[in-house]
Length: 333
Length: 268
Image (cartoon, rainbow over all chains, first blue to last red):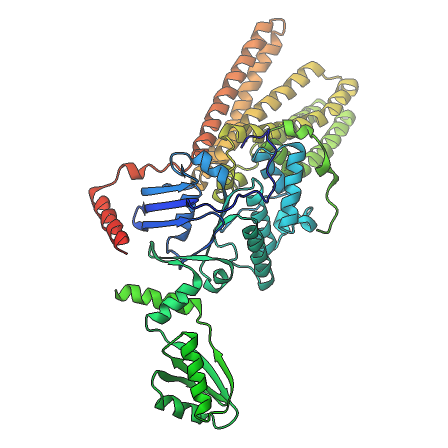
């Protein structure tokens, strides 16, 4: 980074463009005895928040490290803003912010000193450095912790600090490896807010996790990796719909005012319905269609047939279930 | 946000901007570290005690023992405790998780080393300066040769500076290599120190021949230069990541495996 130039404000990223910001083409990573990444391909466009999901050992961290210029693909090409991560790592490092899953702490150092040190290391000087550190501390809600020693921080505070450090050079593309791992619910909520704010400011984020529901709320695109291969690339709703279309049935909770056994009887007489579970006040049924018209028609028929329905609740299909179904489908294929 | 921000943040320019970022960081950490704080205060307490005892003592064996103890205290702090502090536990910056964060800042390896070394020298210099009042006491009250003692102190400081470079080099090694080298290094530092004292004593004996002093100085410069070169080489090597070249030397079996996976991926 040119240390003499004024750093752009944290809200700097320009708007969308048709050309992808990140291109990953036929990337393999072969370690001795471990074939971690097996020919993956994907693009990430400017302004996208992409969730990168996979089980432990699926190849998430290896892929992210290659994108962050900290590892070399055995074969294939990764480019960020048309800069190749292997050929021009210095140029890529100016564009990328990297937040590892495990960051080290420094002894005898306060939160402010840690950020100040990295701001100096990134080449920021004088007033510019002061402004940037303050901006980052405000943004990541670290100002009240400015004088606290690093080794006295909780996990959530530490993650916020690491997040703040990543933002110091105001990178265009942010890579976050398991940022919410080990955080309590409050810290997770705070983290989601930070991601939302960055997304509103036009940053491109690539976030890994093995907790799908968490990423489903934050990300507009999901990328699933399993055994080193990309098994899904699309948005969360499409994944839910896609698995329903593949024969997975939608679950509907129904509560009735009287005679709960009547629901089971009704389901057995109507094609497309299956009883999943009977309950004290109703039942949980599976329905083969998931389009609103079919569901509305089924509800009208239920009422028309004399069932005293007082609650009809379509269960949102969990991403975890959709993911498991998709993996099963892939392995069958 | 809530709390008032430190006033240092609104300065237009800062003297510390002219310094290496690592020097600023290491000084902040180092001056607050237990090793430095306890080392300095412990040295002051011990030197005060030894100097008082030296003033009171009259018989030759006691005064000689106290003199040896005086130099041993200073030598231990300047040669072992301060320069070799990270020898066994390793340098925190060199842990993978911290080092990778430094790599992405585009700092150079020798820049990192220079900042860390200057910080160690600064801390040793503070300790060295804190010894000078005792030297004055020894000169005025015990009537020691102040020039010879100052020369001895300088030798200790310069030896400590070189030892700290070796300390930085060894603390950057993996744990196993670090322990073995560290155990070999401690007697090596004492041995080097002994040679240095003999060399300086020879010069002192012939103090009228300044070219001898220049020769000793040159030897120090060469040793320091080689030490810095070796250590900087190590730091620069580790900064050049990723260094993987395995992709250039793939076996046919690996190539076939990857071709098959690439085809499968294209199909999918």
